[in-house]
Image 1 (cartoon, rainbow, N blue to C red):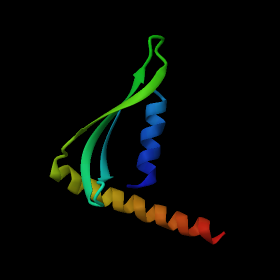
Image 2: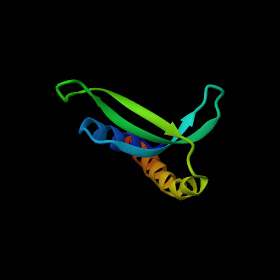
Image 3: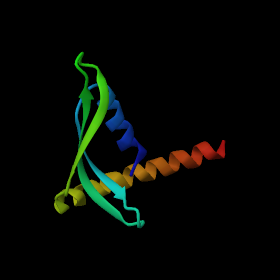
Image 4: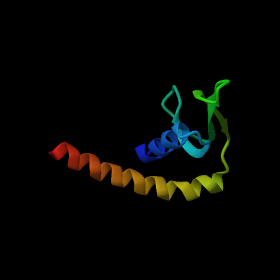
Length: 88
């Protein structure tokens, strides 16, 4: 998973917004699997954010096929950035 996707999700959640995202999870046996995650902030009686909730669904395979090139491009940029940072 590209770090940028997690950054985007947390920025939106902490700002009080819901997020829908395709997430590539890692199973305890080392396998990867995709989910469509719906993440929302949980609010207390005064409206402040007190936690977060996520519901996961089985994603449409055609949608995953559309997300894969974007995630691959983001991971490539992330790799380039990481290599640059570690070369300093």
